[in-house]
Each structure stands twice: as C-alpha cells, then as structure tokens.
Length: 299
Picture 1: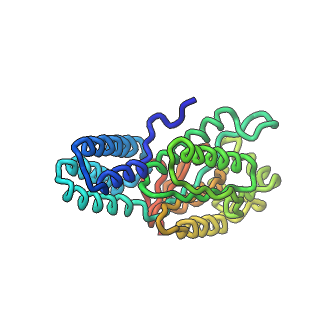
Picture 2 (picture 1 turned 90 degrees about the vertical axis):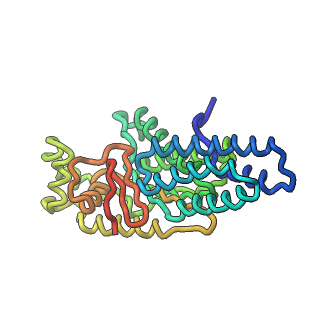
Picture 3 (picture 1 turned 135 degrees about the vertical axis):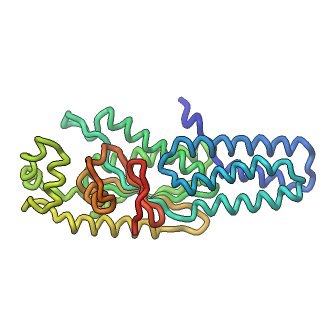
C-alpha cells in the first residue's frame, strides 16, 4: 500500500542540504546532490501553492519567492551558498510562526443507525486529513498538533482519522510531529436538544438554511442563544491561536457542527448564504479568516 505519493518532507531535505554544506570537503558531486534536494523542495512548494486555496496569498507569494531564491542559489560559490541558504531557512521558518486554527464540520452522517459516518463521510474525512498532512510536510520545522471535538461520536471519529493520518508522517516520511490526544471541548458541542430540534422542523423541511436564519433571529424558544454560541466559539478560536511552542509550528483543529460554525461565519462574513458543507472547514490565521475561497478580517 502506498501513502502520500506526491508528498515531500521539506524539513528532511533542508536538513540534508545543511549536512552537505557543513562538510569541510565539498566535491562537485555534493553540489549535484544539493541541486537534487532543491528540485524536490521546489516541486513541493509549487504543488502545495497550486492545490491549497486556503494558503493566504501573501504567504503563497513568500513561498514562491523562496522557490525562486533556491533556484538561483545553487549557482553561488560554497561560501556564498552557505550564507544565502541560512537566510532562506530563516525566511521559510518565519512563515510558520503563527498558529493556524481549523474549525471543521463533521463529515457526512449515515442513514444507518449502526454507523456514525457514511462511507462517503469516511472518504471526506480522509481527504481533509491528507490536506492537513500536506501542510505539515511543507513546514521546515517540527509540528505540534492539537485535536478537539464535540460531544458527538462522529466528530471524534473525524479527529481520529486526522490523528492516524498525521501519525503516518513519522512512519513513512520521518516527519517530526507531536500529536496531542483528542479532547472534547464544550465550545464545539452541538447544544441542540431533541426538543430544540423539533422546534425547527417546520422550517427545516423547507431548507436547513431557513431553519438556521430563523434560529439566529431569535424566533425559537428552546434553541441555544446564538449570541452566546458566537461568543463561546470566538473565544475558543482566539485561545487556540494563542497556543505556540518554541521551535515548532503549532496547528489546532476543532471539529463541530453546522449551525454552530455557521453562526460564527454569519457574524464575521455578513454574507453567509448557505450551511457549511460536511467536512467543510474555516481557517483562522492571525487576524484573518478563510472560508469558501475568501479571506475576511477576524479581530
């Protein structure tokens, strides 16, 4: 069985280049080896910047700049290359200083009561897990991942798929990655009781988004307070962004539900027009939020 056939561990290849340029003797074949390492790094930067729409345009531009600098650097003398590669390494690592926070909706539910995810939902979960794995391998330093879920089993299973996929990075790619155990967090809980769900059924039969907009207008008596949900989720995101470890890139993943995520999206975008899709995600980085191919200010 093959895993991640397109993936490259950038950290490993930066390490190899450092080993080459740290040697006292530097025959011509070593520079050929460096050129090969640079080729792999540049291939992967190009692969990720084209595939991952959630990479901020400014970050994508910096990654392309690093690729161009690497392309030019191997023409330098060894002394000049050592200095240039040190500067490139610092510039690359600085891209991964801020902690990205991913807020995800659970994958597709099954029709059978004996399962927590449909077969399509499992495929969705694996696709998102591979997406995160690709970003982890792009980072030129060790990665530290936090996984949070709601009190519903399907969100834990989604987090577990991500956990197992990221664990494969160490086994198959020698990636230095620490993955914290999966922890339920009340800020991510669904909050809707059966009585509250029954209250929304008339509108829900017409569309899930109609039921959502009716809820945030305060027209249901048994449903949770949408303003309170916004505040709790907003606080969770901001607390998660504050997680950071020296010498590592920290990533936080939280898995929740439609309506819960949607109410935060509605408050930030002011143009939210449909329910977040199953296994869809919102990405927070610094004072910005990414959703549905657009970036928004997030204070």
